[in-house]
Amino acid sequence: MHIPDGFLDVKTWVTTYAFSAGALGYSVKKSREVLNDRLIPKLGIIAAFIFAAQMVNFPIAGGTSGHLLGAALATILLGPFN
Image (cartoon, rainbow, N blue to C red; front, side, top):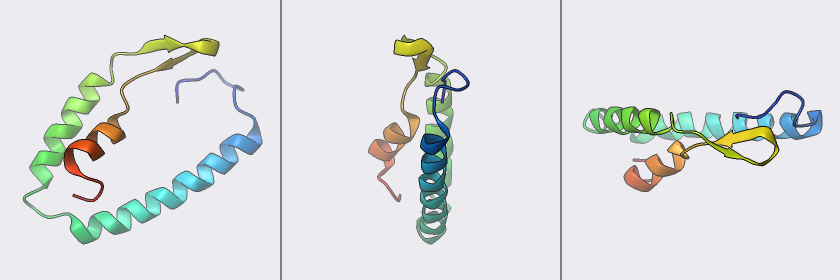
């Protein structure tokens, strides 16, 4: 996240860390089931595009900034587990 230090309290970041760890574990497990050699080049191209597009930041309230939601774009283009 692009937020100042101390912007989130401990209760918030511990909770989001726990949810993120669970989601990451599930995603790795599911990716191992469905990832094939034909899909890997497509994933690489999408990842390169998203990396470049996320370089554009825009300011939002409270001294924070935002950018393109790359995971959402990849999911829309490739499907959640493809």
